[in-house]
Length: 275
Image (cartoon, rainbow, N blue to C red):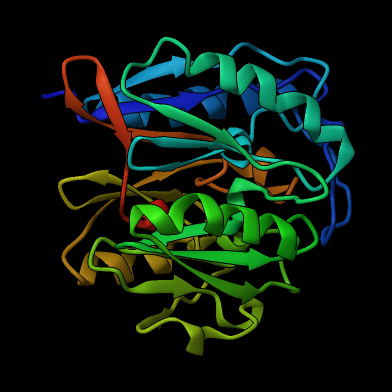
C-alpha cells in the first residue's frame, strides 16, 4: 500500500492515570492495557500505509500521549500550541523538536497569554472551527487567525462548555458533514451540515484515507450509521484514554505526503476529515 503520509504519536506515560480531568470523575486506569490499546491504535494507521514518527516519550507528563493538543497543521504550517493547563506546557518543545527532521514545514507558536489546545481545532475545507473552551481562550484563537488567515483560512469561534475540547464533541466525515452526540454539543447550527450520532464515543472519528474511518470500539451503532453512508470503519478499543476525556483524535497528528520526504498537514476535517 502506498504511504499516505505520516502521523506523530507519543507513547503513554506510566503516570497516565494522573492526567488532568475536567468533566469526568476519576476512575482507575490500567497502564499496561493503555499501552496495548495505544499500540493497536498506531497499528491501525501503519497497516493502512501511514508512516509513524514517535515523539520523544514524556514520562513526567501524564497527558503527553494526547499529542494532538501540542501542534496543529495547516498545509505546510505547523502551529505549536500553548496548552490551557500549566501541567501540559512542558509537552510542546519535544513535539516541536520532532518536526525538525521533516522537510518543507514552517513552524509558528501560540504565545501566552493566549492558550490553544489542538483538540479545539476542527478543520473542514479551508475553515478552522476553534473551540472556546476551558483550554482555549479568545487570545489564542486570535493569534491563530493572525497566522492562518493570510494563508487562505477562515477562523470560526465555537462555544464549548459541555466537553473538554471541540473535537471531544464533534468531528467531521470526508464529505465535510459534522457529526456529534447532540446532548454534548453547545450549538450544532454553527456547522453547515450536522449529523447526530447515537453514542457519546461515536462523535470522534479520524479519516485514514480511501473512505476508511477509525473510531472507538465503544460506539457500534455509530459504526453502523457510518457503514450506511458508504464508509468503512476500523473500531479500536481506547477505554483507558476515554477515562481521561481522550478519544481517537487526541492520540495522533496527521501529516500527508506531498513529495519525497516532505509532508503537509491534512487539510480536511482533521478528522476533520480532522476528526
